[in-house]
Amino acid sequence: MSVGIWTFSFDGKEIGEVRDAASEIEELGFDTLWFGEYLGREAFTQAGLLLAATSRLTVATGIARFGHREPIAAAAAERTLAEAYPGRFVLGLGGHLPGAKPLEAMRGYLDGMDEAELSTPDSPRRRLLAALGPKMLSLAAERADGAHPYFVPVEHTALAREIMGPSAYLAVEQAVVLGSDREIARRHVSMYLELAAHHRANLRRFGFTEEDYGSDHLVDALVAVGEDAICARVRAHLDAGADHVCLQVLTGDDRIPLTEWRLLSGVAGSVRQRDVTG
Image (cartoon, rainbow, N blue to C red; front, side, top):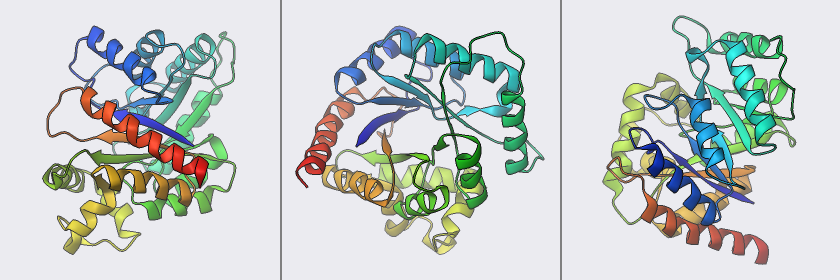
């Protein structure tokens, strides 16, 4: 079983601090480091910096936004990192184009990447799509190695596995709070519900309505609060069909959460031990 770290906390931090944090994540025993692309460093450039700062860690974009670069640029960057760091780079790809239908836009973008005429070696590579709905999940199984769902309950993991079949790779983001401060979790959920219509639509598939917004029921479905809940939630995603769970620590501030990652390494170890012993 596989547990990784997902973070936005590198945005705005000095690169030396970011490199040191990546190195510590590797030493803590997590197998994959995921980072988002929003207002921080360009995704492929940052992936290269993180890969260079570590020796075993897999680095994954969660996600590289396809609207930020032409398909040929993404394909060239993907090939470069796959060649330079064999087996250690995962391209998580997603995002939106204004006025475009998401499925058609992603399919066209993948066509552009796959048809790009490049002189760089076509090294073995791994590509995941930020997929929520059934059609995008099917595309992830058809045109990529699998999916990287974000902000989802365990029920979505089971649906994704059913739609994609047994061989597609399923890497699920899970938000967590160390300690007992549910208000941190509530603010995280409220932000996404306010800003992201596609997340609201996805939650409706599982019976959540506007009446649930702000409720403990919805917050607890999306954020695991406390070490016992985190351990149980990771296990639940794996039992539902996930191959990998990447944990996003919520702290209520923008610091790199090294202290929480150290604590999480013990939680991940407990899950692994329970998996081995049954």
